[in-house]
Amino acid sequence: MKYMITGATGHLGQKVVAQLNKLITKQNIRLGVHTPAKAARFKEAGYEITTINYQNVDQMVPAFTGVDVLIYIPSLTYNVQERINEFENSLTAMKRAGVKNLVDVSFIADQANNPFQMAGYYAYLPARLASSGLQYAVLKNALYADPLIPYLPELIKRQNVIYPIGDQAMSFISREDSAEAIANVAVRPYLRNHGQNYLLTMEQNYNMVELAHLMTMTTNHQIGYAPISLQEFADIYRTEGDGDELASMYHAAAMGLMNRVTDDFRHITGHAPQDMRSFLKENYR
Image (cartoon, rainbow, N blue to C red; front, side):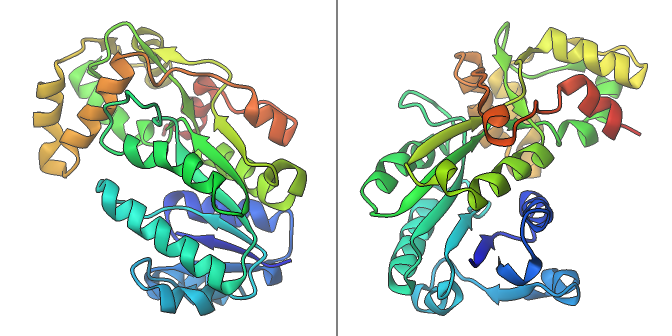
């Protein structure tokens, strides 16, 4: 069996590579990358590397040929139409290359009334796959816990979490746990051959008072919760390139659309995901 991971040099992709290599040999893993130079260390380690371009179906066909299971990690874009086009091109290339099995990485924000700017793409995925003729599973991630770690110095300086979600809670998962679940679904046909739709979360969600308390205990700095408006949040982070997109996501959270909790991770792996307290403690330096 040949397994291929797209986006293999990204934050999640690298962890999926490592987790998959715990379950199968690297000779059975092919890494799809957009920038080969970023995959130098993987090539040196003996992984098969192939270049993929989501805009070029003809180029993707040979990259996908010989693959039994494709783990599709989408590109980082906030343009819904571009993301859909990339996925449609990938489906066309998969069909031409003879790929039969797909593990698709998605996100919690897929409700029809979700205001997150990318929700349209995530809502489209399961319906599109249902008519694709593929054997597949969709794994939706909750919010990644990982970005909270580099965010902590700013929160210590502000002395407050400022997410504009009021009294609502949000669900989280670490990239490491997400990658473990993705790898396990990929190698176990009974977990991916029936159109399964999983949501990967920690075993509880966290409102911002709870999250701020955990951050206080982790950092030994007092961090409270003082939510700002959606507009203020967008204005603060717009210079970083994603202020409006992030604000739309927290708008969804304020509507109670980002707080679901499931036991899907335990169902897939047989054990509990890491909780937020131990995640912060383990990763904060």
